[in-house]
Image 1 (cartoon, rainbow, N blue to C red):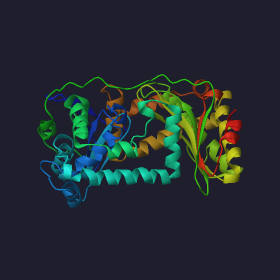
Image 2: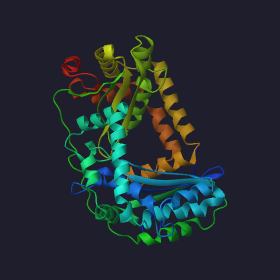
Image 3: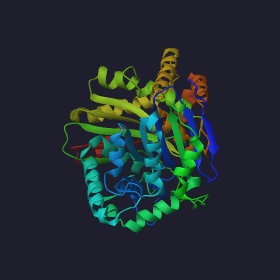
Image 4: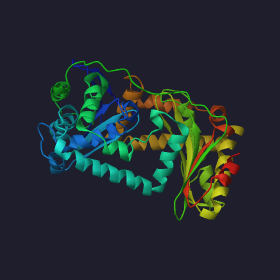
Length: 427
């Protein structure tokens, strides 16, 4: 699967990526290179709050729910997301409804009203979302894990913010974030899908986003500390009355542009990427310790993480931690077999290509590449070639760099009053 993508820079400074596909739908995504790590002045949660709040009304769609009604009325889908490094807004509509979809996305990012009378209501909604995370134990382990990996850092803070910072948020705080980062030079628009009937696409995008203005400079980013060190494993236990112990264990790894990410991708598939993986077999099938178990990785601009997570029997929590830790260390100690290497690479390749059958996934891939690769987007065949080049030796070398015994971080949510037993396992 090869897309003939085209990237252009419009007169306003706005970047546009066009990806024609053989489909009857089109996804329009605007992605701003600013997320929770770009918040300032203690306004933690502003990026996520703003992402919610723009839906409360725009110049052309001034009433609450107007935007939603427009997309629902043409049978489309819409959503938005906030991450540490970026914020995105997208709609997916029939190709014949391209103009209406473009209008909605452009309005959200260029002319939101930010109605003050809706502020307190939205605070309540987000505070309830924070409380929901406290009751969603897998998400709670993730939140604690981030803090262990990246302490005292913008990328270690929860994207959603804290209850006290959300409650203190003012309209001016959201407007300041919007004005600072939602600029033409700091944004990409990706249009992916059935584009054969769309005329004058570049001009339509330029005109729709005109309200943002031309080539406003982007301020210096406030990334916070990017060098993280530790000399022993870190463990944090959250005492909750649960029926399972939820655990997340991992280590820091590589930034988005690091070529070693491809080897990490294959290693992850082998360790815990599916029901044929090492973790699934050792933790669930052989020992019956867990209902869910798997591994994953994520990348920021200059750092990232490689991790495993599981929901396990309370009485077997320490054993599960021990087994998972050992399986991760084995990845660094011995080469994977030829059979595992083939299955790992084919698994990554297959999952990647299946995702790219959806125009929304294609738009996300291109937009995130633009944000994290200094305005450049990879071709699909470029990614596939990089995956194919990964060798068993590469995986062992990369795992030896990442999976270091004294660099582990472990978060646990369950009815445990002390972390001592988990600390002992990790040592």
